[in-house]
Image (cartoon, rainbow, N blue to C red; front, side):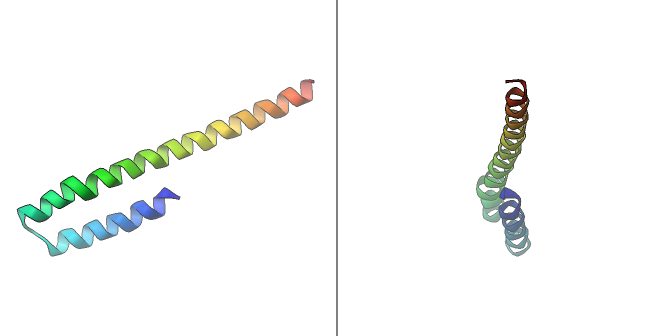
Length: 68
């Protein structure tokens, strides 16, 4: 889910950096692109952890239902 957005934004960042090679462009990369990409990566990690936890809960629920 977030991987597609991260990939697209990374390509945009790369294109931007190839076209803008001054201090202002570098500040845009450092202050806009990089923080957003980092936050999206954190969100992707959180989503993956949530999915894993959901599967663990489902497994435990099935086991509990079998016991009861």
